[in-house]
Length: 196
Image (cartoon, rainbow, N blue to C red; front, side, top):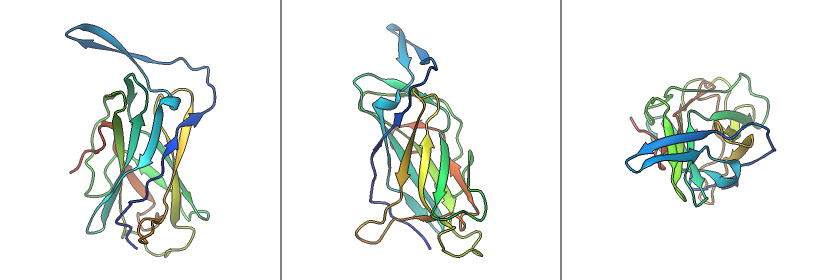
């Protein structure tokens, strides 16, 4: 079953527990000299599921990261994503650093500076017609994901729930049909992950 529209967006603040880990600093050289940019803090960020794309069984959706502070901050690398199905999945669901559909391109991670009130994003991609022997039951229906952003202090996580909107679109993703694998892009600047 294809889920081609995701107009319901859930905003969640990244909230965490106190950590003794030091806050990393990134020194950026500009024509005016050297500017120090802190790694983003959990309290500065919110995440939300963006509008996805679909083409002949190839699907994907962006996860938007917004910096609500008045100063820039940095992110670098790939998020860590964990799937949650309504019942125990027949196989582990994994997220890999390569494309899993024709929606988002495989890209290398690099430092991203998120401007004040600016956005960054990463993409989740999948094919929905791989392993259909398990059907569409609760063991297959991924109704949420937990996201950990790299280097963010204090240690934090956020959950995105896949809700069905009033038009009947959206809702859980069948992780069995994806072959139990999803692709991830690295975090990039702006609200659009790299397309193929």
